[in-house]
Image (tube, helix red, strand yellow):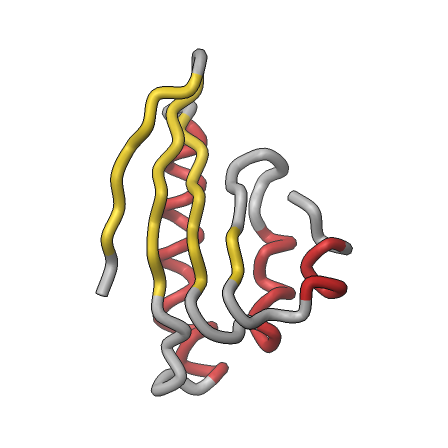
Length: 92
């Protein structure tokens, strides 16, 4: 289930998004089907000066590496049960 809302923030707007951990998707399915769409949405929002603020419910440990593909300052991620030591190294 995806829920989101936009909050005005100075010259930039923030789009809050809620994502389930999608445990039913194997990493290969995530890489092939889910990530390309999510990445395109975040990049498209950034082009419109909207910062995506995804909240990832569950563990995203195996998917943290994908965040390096996003432009800097295009998103601000919130995590539920993810290794913060790994996420801090990728500060976007």
